Amino acid sequence: MAEIIQKDGTWVFDGDTLRLTPGRDKNVGLLRRELGELLVPLAALAGISFEQGKKSGRLRLRLRDGADPLLHATGGRLAEPHDPYQLIVESDRYGVAEYFVDEVRNALLLDQVPSGPVDAYLLPGPSVPLSVSAGDGIASFDGERVRLEWKWQAEDAKSAAGTRTLPLADIVAVEWQPTVGLENGHLRFTVRGAPTKAPPKYDPNAVELWGFKKDPLMALVAAAVQARLPHPAAPVAPEETRPAEDTPAPATATAEDDHDALLRRLRELGELHRSGVLTDEEFTLAKQAVLKRM
Image (cartoon, rainbow, N blue to C red; front, side, top):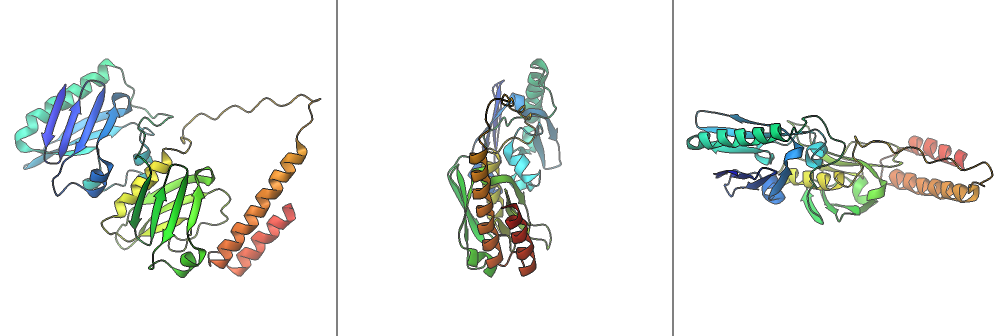
């Protein structure tokens, strides 16, 4: 077993799993503290490195692409204090850090762990339920649905639309973007059947972030949802066997399902129009397209 204990946190490797525990130092990022202890299986690792500096060094884990829903949802854009896969090492522990790296690398070689991408998540993502208040809204997730509530600072278009409830089955993708310079960040959900992708400031399926302390916590919501969506690299299931020619197809049920879906689409368009996301012209064109299908 290899272990390194620092103010920034404690990393322990038992040959199969790395246990990453954030420290209590004031410089430890809020996201790392909220995320808590992480268990990273050896199979999820693509590599490990140690970088020395004059006053301190840094241990870094590199995970295989697609192994962690947190990294996938954030696109590798987590700032250094919030990245759970980095550990600041004091200069008097450089020898321990180098030993730790050697132990992990030897295990990767012995187990012949490939460094390429995976087609299934190897980490579970943040536990639920969870709720985060940041930017212009509050995002909550219970494992089955996302709830978006708007603060008083939200634009009238969002406030008028009211609280949003998004079933997990309707969510196609999730994206977390941090604030960069003068450009605000966001937590956005791509919903099946949404006609447009308005700026986060006006999008009823997005929380706009302004660069404040709790913004990174929205990444936890993004990761929890991402962990429950189909993996983007998962193999596509083969098409079901087509029914025999003498087997009647359930045409009536299909027509009814399509009709219900179109009615739901009309209601969604009306809501987006009332909230100001769709202009009069966009609403009219979209409505006509739906009515033609009916």
